[in-house]
Length: 161
Image 1 (cartoon, rainbow, N blue to C red):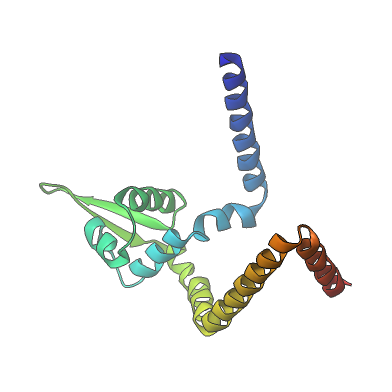
Image 2: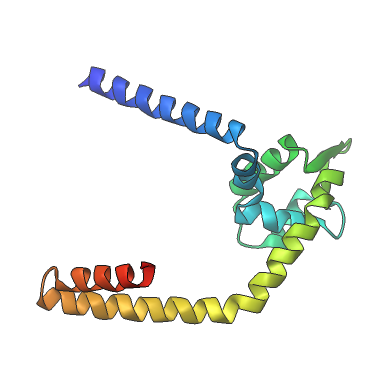
């Protein structure tokens, strides 16, 4: 049993290493893993107005935990997107600011943000339609097992061809 757990842990570790190697070899994946998550985007947008201390940054973002904010700030600092300045005081004051690299991300993020605002209603309507169809399909499938999934596969195949 212990041997099995050890082997499983080694497989997970190897899988993570391979994933990290793939990210390092693919610049797009490597960068999007960082700047594509919601907290990084919100932090960069929040710091666009200027440097902020940790507590103020957390208040402005609102629904982020202290742990997640700390982790995301550390990752953004590691990637050169922001700087962390510690001021000698009691308790020490820490301020975060965008670097030049972080500011260069504002244009693409603003474009994506604008696109999201323009298309939000359309996306929500598409989701509602999808959910309604999925629910109807599930209801029909309960009466006739397998029929709804076959019908859906035929519909999808027809759209692909």
